[in-house]
Length: 108
Image (cartoon, rainbow, N blue to C red):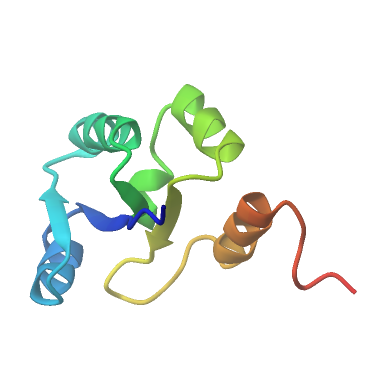
């Protein structure tokens, strides 16, 4: 049986507005603690396979949740840079792919 995983967007107004227009499920957060709470809740719901989050807010989470995120392959967490387009961690997507697959696609 093939399961279909849903997208979820957790973030501030600029991120959520754009993704909402694309028809994705979303959860708008007010601050860092609200973000962390919503992210922890989303991790318990098996229906979400990809969770798109604000990169800035993701970098502010508690170290225990960060450690948990670093150890899981599902759901995939995709950090989106601020609306300015400047990424705080340019290599993050490569690291997520490596974590999900178990090896680095870019390695020779």
